[in-house]
Image 1 (cartoon, helix red, strand yellow):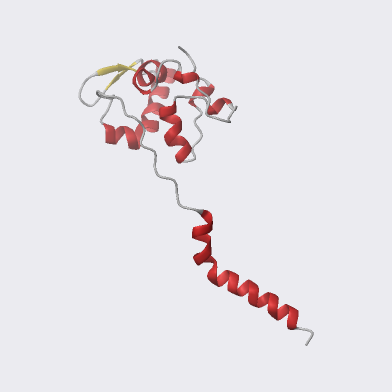
Image 2 (cartoon, one colour):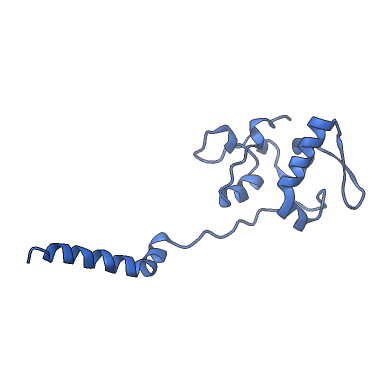
Length: 138
């Protein structure tokens, strides 16, 4: 008879664990919809699919080329030459005037600054944008 409370607790814990998949999903809510940022008209330095998948690799390569090798120009796959500059090339199309200094609502950390175009997807993917720690040049 002394084991009755332990048995009841064990049954409650067991039932909770067995039914966890059934009640957790509704309690957690549905996943947020992926963002669909407004993509500017015209052509980017590379095609859209490539930029969507590899933009950070390209930006890291630009950083290495500019800082370590002193290169300033990037030749795209179609032969067009672009200046390797986040603020003067990318943000010419991907930010509104003054948008590079926008702070996301409720966030005061320097890494939260940046154009809404960038923050929208990076917030969704839970990726910290650290570009603005250094790149807030006009």
